[in-house]
Image 1 (tube, helix red, strand yellow):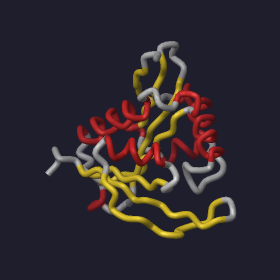
Image 2: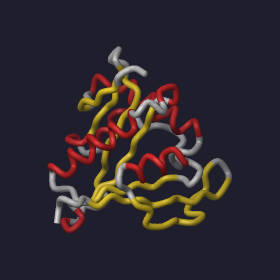
Image 3: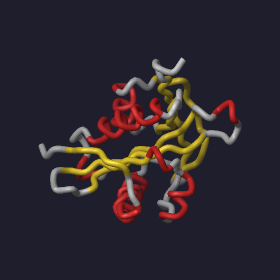
Image 4: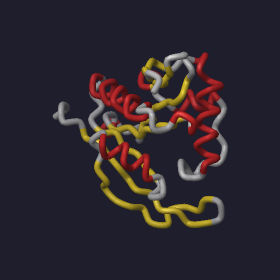
Length: 165
């Protein structure tokens, strides 16, 4: 298995980030979205200090992670929602866990106390990854939206920092 490392995301990564995002959407169990955003829209919705990419030994970008604020209210300044996407050809190589671990360290250093995510129940690999990284299931939003003509549930997960009290 080739070595995987994580580094901050840059504008030079835009094409690969968006391509991996679209591949995840095309697979059908990543999001209600069906089209990846433009790079400008992606950048506008993600906090700049907490965007990372995973690269293999050949410096080929194989995954990314980024966060968005959950609210503009000051009381929720330490609560974010994240997205993590791995190139389908690179899944199972540990990139997702490295990205999550990097994000957790980054957000805790910034005083962010809760990271949350919504995952389709059929995305069992993502659910397992999150639980191994310390996320817990806090509920299920049943039939919350239609996706490709059918109702979908979303499992809500969160990781509360044990270091920020």
